[in-house]
Length: 509
Image 1 (cartoon, one colour):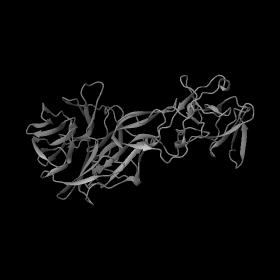
Image 2: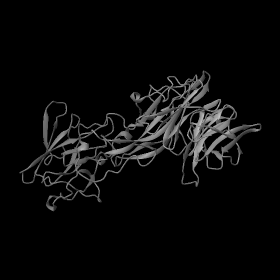
Image 3: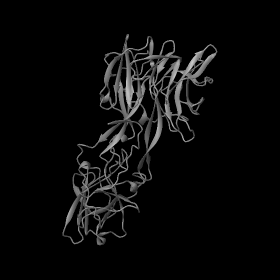
Image 4: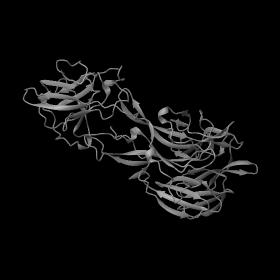
C-alpha cells in the first residue's frame, strides 16, 4: 500500500503488551506474566555525560517472555559501551549476577550486582548475561542484556545505489522527461524524437508502471507538463496552454502562458510576456498583475502548496529561477491566492531549475532521547553560469520555516558522490508501508497475561515502568528523484530512491 506523503506521523506511539520499558513514569504501570520472583522490573544506565549526555534517560525495553533486555533505539554511532554502570530493579531477588567478557581479554567474568552495584560492565564484546535468583533461592532466570549502538549515522539521507532504476517507458534513451504527482499517482512523461509515452504508477516502491503511447500537441514543451488538483496541462513552443483529464487526450484552452509555476488546487499559476512586460496570470483567468521586480519568470523549482495558520487560503511557493532581466536568483517567492511576493530573507545560492520537495528531518531530544519530526523543505541541484560557462550543481539546501530562511545542509544530508550533478529533476515523496515480517527477536513478542506483580514482590520505593508494544508496520517516506540534466542539457536516464535511514527503522514511540 502506498499513500501520498505526508499522511500522518512517521513515529507511531508504542503501546501495551509484553515488553516493559525501564524509565520511570508516574502514570504508567508494570505488567508482566507469571515469572515468579525472578522478574526484572526496571533497567537503566547510570548517568555518565562523558559517554553520552543524559545516558540515564536512554529507554530500555524488558521482554519478560523471551528474557531479553535491550534499547530498541540504538545509541549514536561511536558511543563507547565498554564501561557502563547499571541500575537494575528486581522483584526482591536474592541474587543478581552479570556475566560478560572482561575488557581486553578473552575471559568471562561475573559481577554480583547486589554487592557491587557500581562496577562497570563491558557491553562492547557482545550481550551480557543477567542471572536473577528468587528471594527464596529456589528458582533462577537468565536474561540477555543488549546495549545497541548504531553502525551507521541514522539521520543520513541515504540514496540506495542498488535501487537506482531507468526512467519508465518504452525508450532506451529518452531525450526529455517530466514527472508529476496527480491524485496519489506518479505520471512520468518521456519523449524520444517525435514519439511520447506516459507511464503511471501508484506504488513507486514496487515500481509497477502502466505504460501507454500518447499524442501530444504539436511542438509540446515536455518541461511544462504540470498537474493541478483535477487535470493535466502542457504548453507548446508558442505558449499556448493545453488541458487533459487523463494525460492522454489534449484540448486547447485558448489561454497563453509563457511559464507555468505549477498547480494551485484547481488553478494553474504562470507568467506571460506581453508587449509591455511580464504579467502574472492564472488559468482559469483571474486578476492579472505585473510581475514584481526580481520575481523569476522561468527556471523555477517545483511549486509547493501548503496551509498556514496565518492564512485562510493555501500558500504556494517556489525557490530559484531566472528573472525578467535575465539574472539567476536564489530567492523564494510565494502566492497567497491573490498576489505574489518574495518570502525568503536568506536565500539559497543563485540557481535555476532547482529540485525542491517537502520532507521531515528527525530531531533528537538529548535530554530524553526521544525522536520527533521536523518539517523541512529540501532543495538540491540546479544550474548557474560562471566564468567557465554553464555549471550544474549537486548542493543541497534546507528550510525549516517554509522557505523564509535557507541554509546549506550538513554533510549527512548532502548527495553521495555516485549521484552526478544535475538540474531540472523532479522529486516526489510517497509513503510505503514497511513491516517486520521475517524479523526474529522482536517479531516473536507475545501478549502477557496482564496480571500485576503481587504486592509483596514490588520493590520499594515502587519504580513504575512503561508498558509498550512493538509496531509491526509503519509508513516510511521515500523520495523518488526523476531525470535531471547535465550541463550540456543531456537527460539523466535515472530514478533514484532516497530516505533518511531512521525513517526506515521500526518506530518506537
